[in-house]
Image (tube, rainbow, N blue to C red):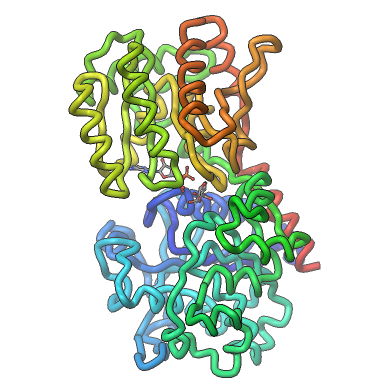
Length: 488
Ligand code: ADP
Ligand code: GLC
């Protein structure tokens, strides 16, 4: 690519697949970076060097000019360094922020008293990394609340630096449900001095500092991960208190659907599943189902439909509807149910009890397993995602590619990626219900189970889904267009 067309992007996030992942944020930051790199842009992703990364065997190299630096965070001074690494099978350099005092922990989000320091440091270190290496990004691409202070820092603490004279900031909202809200006692830790007047003053008077809201105030452009969610978050129902602000900025809020990394998620070459398959021959899919049932100790008839689910177990994901609807469906119809996920203890307890009550028909794997996530996508007939809200959702898109029919609620990215099957036109890729209530989910699950009995219709739905293309080649190009418009 000609040098003048090459965008310079500093992408900063708290997660990056496969190194540090709790959800889709990791997949998206990683796949978008890979897309931008392969398209010839100079993208520099920065994330913390968490313990799991330092223990993963990843080869890292210290960057000479970025060792043993210090940063003042209120009363504390922390020492940090930045190392470089490459993921296996990739030529993209990623940057790792090493500060054992803040990141050498078992969990990515340990939620301790010093949580805000961890993400203030990440945001400021990203800017200082650019300064010290003379890298003038066209775009700072921040993701979620963890890095949402970058636009404000650029306008205040680093406003003096002409290196950033042409830099524009983009904040991508992956989930409005997490905002990073702290007491105003942390004000001194931000190091803003006079810049504190740029914070949301009503919040400050009320004793709060909201990281995400600060980003919504100061980023040049806001994006979120599906067109429907971009509209929804401007409403009282979905705005989580930020709707007025988002409405006021509606001209600069864009919904860009996430892509799928088909290099990772395609049954035709997925090495994490026992049998590979494609639309031409679904034999492997049937074998994956049988193997999965054996693996999970599921003893139902093989022709009973297998419903799969892979999810963080939080209220967002519609688990309360599953709690009220699934037991009765399991009692009424032949059915197998495989669930992978962890999260809120009450939901974990529910699935543990469900497995106990329906031994042989239900398996709950409490934990995190990428291999099992792939296997459930491949071995299930139906994938369940009845989310209360869903900014985009990746699993339903994976399901489509794996010939697993998604049952979803019509919200956010689920509404943008799954269409209700219409027996008249034979178009559609799944079952979609609208209202968030028991009747909605009950209807959807029963509709899917009825359709499953109609082999002809089922095959059609499966094929419609497998033909869908949500690749990053498309979605990444939308980001590039936006970045170009911004920098023009
Ligand atoms: P969210 O980001 O809200 O969790 P997404 O559907 O966008 O939802 O992405 C979830 C990602 O995390 C998917 O790649 C999914 O496979 C993965 N995932 C979620 N829970 C688990 C788990 N327990 N084990 C393995 N992967 C998981
Ligand atoms: C969030 C959302 C999910 C989205 C993911 C990646 O965690 O909950 O819907 O797919 O981020 O953007």
